Image 1 (cartoon, rainbow, N blue to C red):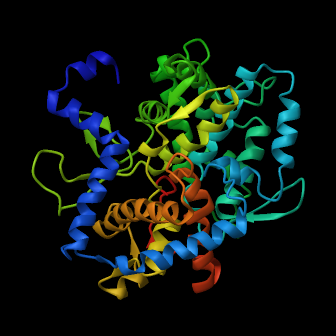
Image 2 (image 1 turned 90 degrees about the vertical axis):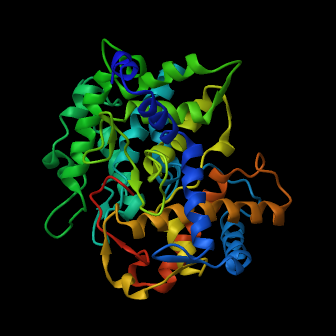
Image 3 (image 1 turned 45 degrees about the vertical axis):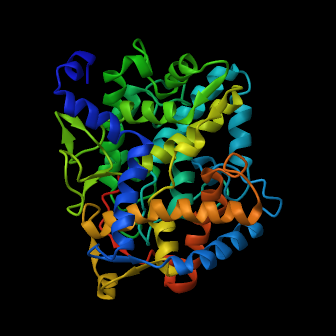
Length: 418
């Protein structure tokens, strides 16, 4: 949306959009619902904080299993590219060795953005057989390896001589048929949300044209966002929230069928009727994919010598592994356990409650872990606790409780939310 269009909006709309695009709004609205849960005034969930210490113990055990020296990396898409070893990324680095550091960072942006957007739940039956190794990958790891291979094969580039990029024309040319071929989709190997995923990439290609300030004019590509973020840095310091804001602005038009204010698509923002008062007070933002994308963009920026600040302003990711951890270990309790047998839309108030309470509980798990380990939030930021951490612990407990490690609540996914 142009600056003139934004300026023409009512003041209340402008303020609401800016607020709902801030990490603070995610915490604020989640804490409002958390307070209602503590007072037993939510329709679907209760919180049981007597389980907080035992959940923290479980997470700490998982952290020490994976990272005994507590040298934990960020929770980002790069961890999934490393599954089974780091050969993929080493091979890519070799292919990019002749490029400047700036161009390598741009290429990594081009790789990771489509990969994150393609990551939403794959379903329990899809798998990807990696051609180079013949290893079989599923879920997030499978989607990561498949998207990595698609990128290296030039699926997201419009220039045959420059396959390692994701530009506007290349992304707009991604059809369900092409994506199905790249992800080995068939009747026997179904992928949830195939068409919405391809439409998401097509919309991303269109969005690159709409935001020349972020993605360039002559040849719009995702990687040009690096230039914009370098301009926003001061003394080689860059706020994580600045990266987050640029992601939300650049991706604002790619989400379909979402809530809008004055024509501005809000993305991963939903309604809960328990919140009321001022206009827009009932809107609950999460921006899960955008936050995870932000986390995934930080490492290439660090490789350019930038210091990332304000990490503590970002929130935990409200998705089914972190949320499943809280539900499976009793921090959250459903008031009606029959709901475990049903499928729920992402916009249902049950799912909104689950996600918002997850955000608040992740902060409390993080504080408990830091106290146990005598570390500060700067030494052990939430993005590392997620990796170490709550996401892995959520997957572990799910695999112990249910065949295939499915989440405790079943979500009707269109492939664009989780």
